Length: 567
Image 1 (spheres, rainbow, N blue to C red):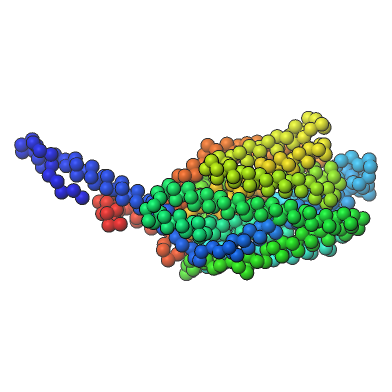
Image 2: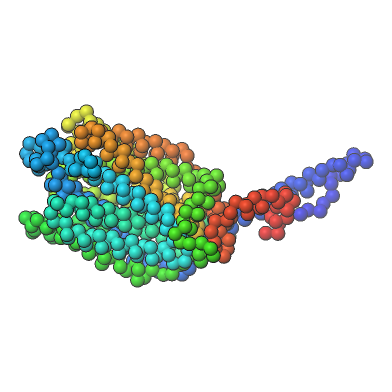
């Protein structure tokens, strides 16, 4: 602080009442500079070294896990097999029990006994989806946040992976229409565990991105004052985008390779009634071969110890409740989570509804679905690499890239909605499903990479599993709403699947607008860093209670000023 005298020529007898303006300005300037330095240092402190540097084997095993966890089995063929068996077991609603949904004069509304009445097969498939998302909600809220402590996260990923593998291998038993209920159960087990693997896998990548050699070099430059805080933030953001996009590319490469591999069974065994079961086993075997290496080469980066008096099964709810109470401190994070909740619901339910229409159009053919999937896989790889190149070349921020994919998310249900008024367009013609898969690959594959990176930038460091659990809740469990609403609409419309698209169009459009106008990623990132520093002591622990905050805020202004200069 300056010790210079007041300005010259003061009014006689009143010098003690004249404010020392220069002194005040110096104090204010010093305070702002100190606060700015603390804020900049917070970026580094909150993203402290999380353990060993990521080596090539670990990073490639991370990519290869996602290469196998590509969703062909649990997110695609399992539903097709379930819908196929349910349709074979159902009857024509227009002709009553005893009729077949596979007859040439089928009315188009296939139903099955359900509780005290009956429901269309499409509605039952959507109910299975809704129930799956409900169970995902319980998983993500109960054990998701606990994964931030100790080594729980790595073991949760292993457990859910093993459950999914078991569910997929058990599909060999689904060989008769009478087993459609078992098919529904195995589909749900596989789909729930698959969704869990995606969430706990995604929660790993922010910590990986902070510990790559490139990220460490950036941090070293920042600590040596070679780059500014803004340059550090942008560099780390691009590193996160790099890993996210490359892992997404590997998932799509795995998707493409798996579909090609399927042809080795689907073509020579086309007349074998168990060929679909064999394909599911083959797909799952590929994931086992590519996925096991992550659990071998993953390096330890444990979180803090579980606080005394806390339990893994209750900690999640405590953490989430405390986090939700702090929405004012993380406004952009929670606006993103809420709007993404609706956007993901619209996208996931739209995908399910289009798949139902596609399966009906191609009579549940694994072979035809493989060809359609190949068109999507090839375009997905090209688009993910293309979007990443465009972003890296022009240094476009994540939000703008994500919004481009949001436009496509809105257009797909609009496309289906047109099918209400005409049979010539709107997922009625075979060529449209080819066009849909190409369009989805071009514009929706990058959606997954950019949505994940957006979440990582808005997540407080050290709370990845908790907030990615909430993100998983938004991305997967959000679809408790969509499938249940759509199945009711379809059921009331006598099995008309196209009646569900208007609701999904409105949902996607509203969510996209909120993300564009309501989420400031730069401010949200700084809020997240401040939140992490305030809420988790250096030794670890649960979120700090509000009482501690109140005590902190009760200090007077002078005490805060002294603290700034002491720091």
